Length: 398
Image (tube, rainbow, N blue to C red; front, side):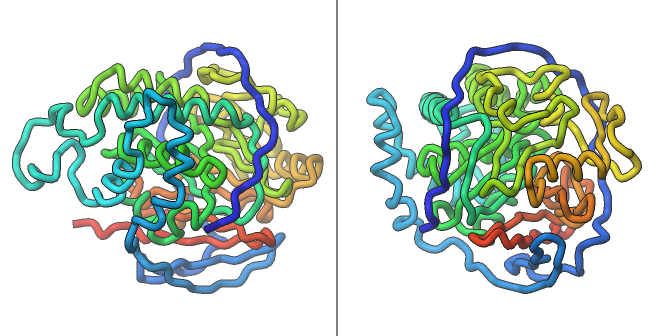
């Protein structure tokens, strides 16, 4: 079992509301910093680096074995986390169903798998009552933890998933199930993929079961207006009901915004902001909150690095800014950071460096949207802050 991560502080504030505009397509770029990846999906290729140095290594992680010992480890604690009205929810059973549901067509029960059947809400194997209980407890835990998480290594850092549930299971086979591995997810759990419900629910269940080993940040797609455009709203409407969608949105509005690993690695979904002058600003971000159209929170979830920009430039996404190498240099120097880890942008090799390895983009959904031939990556930060990458090979197209 991995050592529980440190979390300090408690920022619970009042709600604010706003709307967010529509944006364009994601960016695909190649990674000139990476080497050729191995052929086997079960292998992990590591571009190991410490403050700029780079070597490579291979390791193999076995697939899921007997889940019982792993699930049992956090059962008592998880039951304590649920209120009396929620105590009859079998969290372990839900987790095990989700873990064993790889390859299942979304919206179809195991009995009906392979047969034509209408996509009715009864076919989803987690009930609305169970979803309500899970979301209620997850929301409470998120609000009990600060907007800026302060974590200790070792930890696995996972980028965008976008409803690619089978790839989430591949990640956990490769990198280990919690609590044997600590996790930090950078956001964008939903939209575009076919199984946003399974993806989000598994993450929330693990958050409840292992609240000090499993952490989730907010992405720009964890937003009511964006999910109405890019698929999660429709998935909830088709497979469950709109009340469940609203319940999930309430959870989105409580998610932490950023994380510091060992005071040296800054983690965020999108990027930096011209309005970010101190880390205390992050601690004081009010939650629950919608994502505003502009300002600090919008920038943190929407901005992108751009090698053609000197400092700041308006983003082609139609929201926030692009920032250049000088901005990264100044930020890391000011706050005595070694590295910035962010997601938000599909990159060909699953990860891509920027600003002489002071920033790295991590994207964890291979074959994104079924249109890109990109790899997926998970960044592993060990106890000595040695960073490496575990890669997911893109699926072979039929």
